[in-house]
Image (cartoon, rainbow, N blue to C red; front, top):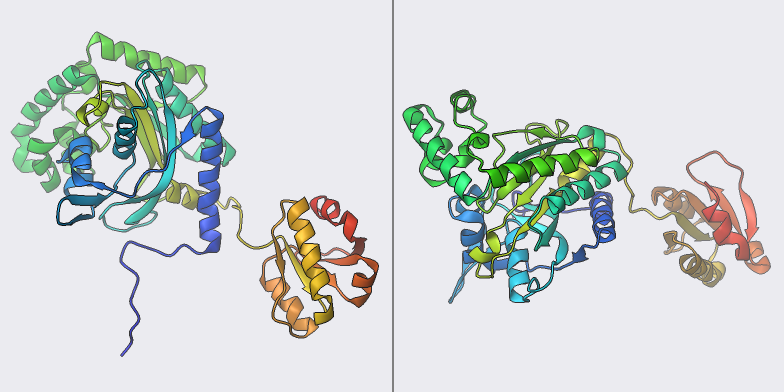
Length: 421
């Protein structure tokens, strides 16, 4: 009987090349965010369940259906389904926004107990950014501009569209909610099952229903734009003007509400049609009441979260080359006598260049060593025999292109390799 334990459904192992793709996307986001003055924060993977039921909303799908929760002797704990509530808690705990306007970014695993599908896993990776203490639309537009910069750096800007909407402030949102419930109550028996449940608990989420019959009913539903007060309308208009000034194209989708209860004013989503039915790559918006809701003093705030897995998958689907995990250079000593010299050459390369260098280990005949170099994925093999070691030289053999093998002094090796492309 086999003792093998199968992988948990919705989880996966990340092997070298796939992980390299994910890490490269995260790195671009981190570099860009820090160039705008955002500082990295590390957040715990597990929080008290109450943080999410209060902050995200008990009736949201993320909380009511998708959290991984466990109860210990004293408390109920949950793996985080998203990062904003945790980041707000951290800012409150450290008293960071009193007299300050912190801008933070984070990356890591999130967990949701949803049905696995293309680019959707129960453990997935996000990068997010949150800005505290800014009540105007400037920071909302800045967040979008940062993401747009990243799309352009990653060569996927043409494959991603941006949708925006305004949910208004608490007053306008409440007025629209009441009107929406009154309208939809007439069609309760015609709504899909999820929408019937949401009618009492979270009616705005019905606007995001994927059910065709429900969407038909929604065509005549009250629009949030009809309920915005002057403050909310001005905020949204200024937000759109800033996006236009940045040259960022966005379409207004009055059904865009986002899945979490804390949003107010501007909300936004990035979508693609290259990844099947699940079109969303990321999203965000403003959440001016969340700090107070979680026990802090009132503080305006806005942020975004991007699904790193889905961005990496999109680049793969488009055939865009991502960094790989294999070495750039494979160093081969032709006999055991040259092993120490080979190790010294590799150490010099690692110190004086950014190249990834692997040294052959395990002995074997020359042909076996060359086959190992080829299997490694390296572009170049450095071959060291007795003659090369005696003269402080190495031979360069290109493994992926047809190019004549050359011998160079070790002193010139880093420069030669860096200029070899």
